[in-house]
Figure 1: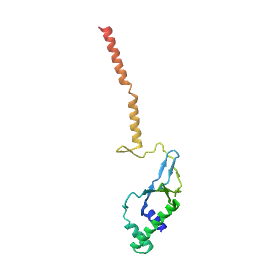
Figure 2: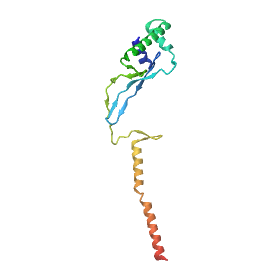
Figure 3: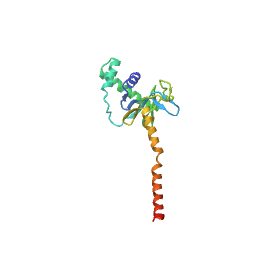
Figure 4: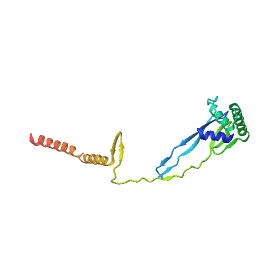
Length: 189
């Protein structure tokens, strides 16, 4: 029964354990590690949600899955499922923990059921991801809502820099006008 429940968890991404709680698998996508210049592979994580009240999950899909796998009626599959969950709870109460490979283990701490995920090895090795920059090669580029090329963007940035280089012209003209006005008032009157 353990293998079937684990298969259900892997295939459908969630599993309710009667009287205990719910396990849910979460896919963690691949990530770019900027500091080490590598692409870390995708991985999986198992989240645990302890039982907070009445079970809200419908077990019809699970019992149908178990019935097909065990080749029994859904009622018999449901009874076997409940009995297995009761055995799991009893083992946890007796030993204080229940190892559930390869996912992790259930722990009983201060009368509260917890799940500790097992360390897992990624299915793929990290990939080296050095950034390659080709100077002078035009390619498509999105800037805000506009689609442009690197060549057009470089020309735009060069124009902007030329305009910035003449910023001093207006303050100089104002200063010269102020000096001329002062000289005219002082000696011209």
